Structure formats: structure tokens, C-alpha cells
Length: 521
Image 1: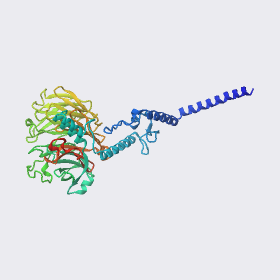
Image 2: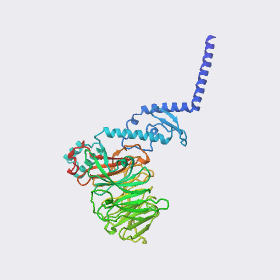
Image 3: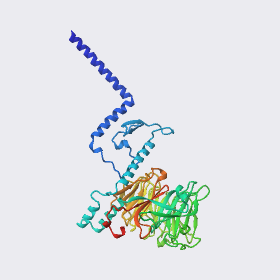
Image 4: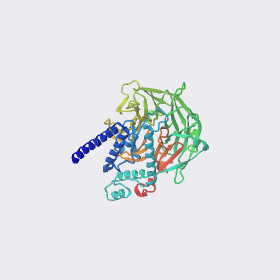
């Protein structure tokens, strides 16, 4: 009898325990807080047991689209954010009020800022870098001595190694108005052909832009000092495009495209470089060569160095390309199907290459009148708006970038893409490309404010340089690379302008001096 009662009581007790556990389980399923803690514990355990998930973050390829939850293999829950430090989910509130502590944009910005600071620390801490697995200074020298590398590949790899070892140094800018240097922000920089001058467009606090020219002849280690020559020229209109123009001599003027404002139409202005107080080529420009042309809504501009279009410049308008002769004032118009955002003249052949908002890239045969049917020489298409077009020296290839972040090298003879450069970030910004065939590199600044350097030879990403300032739309750096910064006797390096500061990434002393030719010493 006692045993039977004990069995019945045990059965009732186990049944009540089972029912209570079931009720608790239902409560956990209905309560999102329990579901979050269970799922976070479960996936954290799974992540810790997976050996291939650790240690595979790419320090050279930051991205704005990938979140922390995706990197740690934790699933994304709608309306929740997973914090890897606290190892739990947090609810996301609607982002339309100012009191919201967590929004997707704020979380993404926090992650990007943390990543940028980590990369900056690595840049300062890691002096010797490796661009390719198995290639460092000693291995390159040894393979050359053993005959495994010819002179072309040896120089290319040696230069890639030097580019990867460039060190950041802040440049001291001297000016007659030091207070303006502390307040005005760099918007755009553009080096001339010999890389001894830098044209700058600066945004001023009261609104609008002003221009300046920086003399780079004093840009030498260890001081890195330059002088900025300013002018009273000031505009309250947006500067859409800038290029150096060779009217009296090489790089004698600067061609500016200004957007119209209210009832004031847009214009293209030729600004003589001699207007800036400088001892560089003083007195070589004729007086009164400052001229302006009324042009409605110009998106881009380019100066012609082709003898068949001498003293001419082109402007890309809305659904039109306008070719203007500065001396005669003659104009020739070519109708297009979209806004022309990028342009460049070829030098050997009378062609003008254009990149459109529709993604089309086409060349205009300058020998054909605009009324003729055959003035379009070639057709290439991107999937997004083309922001930059660069013609390579042999003029058989064209490099182009678009607003989808795609950078492609096109073979004009076969009209197909032969190489694509991965890692560039762009969604809607007007970002230029910097192609340097002599050094075999491609430089571009992404909308994420990272400067990336690729090998032209095989599209290998050589280096990713974080910005010294937090990522924002207003802090996208403007860069200029040259093998001879400051003139023929200058040293190779990269110039970066962001906010009020100018930085020089010069070749490091950690790379052996006998890696390449004497001109790199």
C-alpha cells in the first residue's frame, strides 16, 4: 500500500513538474526577451565551437554594408540589434525622433569608426607591410638574383612594396593668412603635370569657395613644409569640375566649371595661374587672359592637348557635350541621351571620351561635324552612372568608375571589360580615379573615406589607407599621387587633403634602398 501510494504520488509529482516546465517553455516562447537570450546563447556557443570563424577579418577591406552581426555569424532579427561586446540583442527604436539611442545608421557609424581607429593604430604600429603573400624585400631580391624575376616584374613588385610602406606625415602649410588656414576646409586638390603645384578649392565658413595654389617645391623630409598662395577670387557657387589648362604654356591656366545659382547661369572660367602671388613662372602669362563662358548646368570639363583640337575645352552638360575654342570662340554641340558626368580627351587620336549618368561611355570623333551620323566612335556600358573616365597612354584601354562602386578596365578594340578592381565603395558621390601607368598603380577614394591603391597589372589591392578623420559625407579626402612630388627632383608619395589638414604619405626608410632604380632613392 505505501509503495502504491508512493508510485501514484510520484506520477502526480512528475506530471506537475512536466506541466510547469511546459508552461515556462510557452512563456519563454511568447516573451521576446527569453527568445533573445536563448538564441544569443545558442548562437554564441555555436560560434565559439567553429574554428574557421575566428581570425579571418580582412583588415584591408572595410565595408559599410556588412554589420557586426553578419561578421560573427549571428542572425539578424527584424527590429533588434546584436551587440557582440554584451553578447545580447537590443531593440531598435524608430529612427524618426531625436531621442532614439539606437538606429541602424548610428550603429553602422559606430562600427565604422571603431574599425577606422583600429586601422589607424595598425598603420602607426606596423611599419613593414606585405602587399602579396610570399613577397617581401628579401624575397624579391633573392628571386631576382636567382633569375625568377625579370627586370619589369622586379621593378613593379619593388614599387608595390614601397607603396605599401608609405608613412603618413602632416604637412605644415604656410600662408599670409594663417587664420584662414585654421577655418577653411579642403574641398578639392589637383596637381599639375610636373607635380610642383597643387591647385586647391577650399570651402569657407561664411559659405562659398575660394581658390589657392600650393607650391610643393619645399615638400621634403623631415620638415614637410609648403606655402599656399591665395587670391581674392571667391565664388558662392558650387565648383562641379576642375582641370589644368595649357593655353600659353603647359598648365598655364585652371579650367573651372561652376553651377548656376538662382538667375545666374553656370559658367566655365579660365583662371590664369599667374594671378596667384607666386614666384613660379612669374610674368610668363599674358595679362587679360582671364575669360569666362556662359554654360548652363555644366557637370564636367576637360582640356584638349590634341593638336587637332588645339586651344579647345569640352564641357559635359545635361544631354549635351559642348566643345569650345578659347581663341576663336567657336562652339560645337553634340546631343546625348543623358547627363555627361565625366570627360577626357585622347592625345594621339582625335577622340573625346565621355561618361554618362545612364552608364554609357562613348567617344566623339572630333573630325566629324555634330550633324553627321558617325561622330560616335565607340560604345561601352556600365550598370550605374559613370563618375570618372581615364584614357591610358596607348589609348587602347579606358578605365572607368561608377556610382555602384565598380572600377573596370575596358579594351577599346574588343569593347569588353578585361579587368575589374574590387573594394571601391560608392553609392551616389562624384569620385575621381587616379591612374599612374609609370608606377603601375590605381588610386581611388571611396565614399567610406578610405583611400585604396590597386596594382594596374592584376587588380590586386595593395593597400587601404583610413582617413585621419571620422567618416562622414563632408570628410571624404581628396588625394594626389606623383612619383616626383615637388618637381623633377622630388620624391614619390601621396598627398591627402581632408578638412583643414594636408598629409604626405612618403616612401618609408624601412624598404631597402637598392630595391629599385636610383630615381626612387
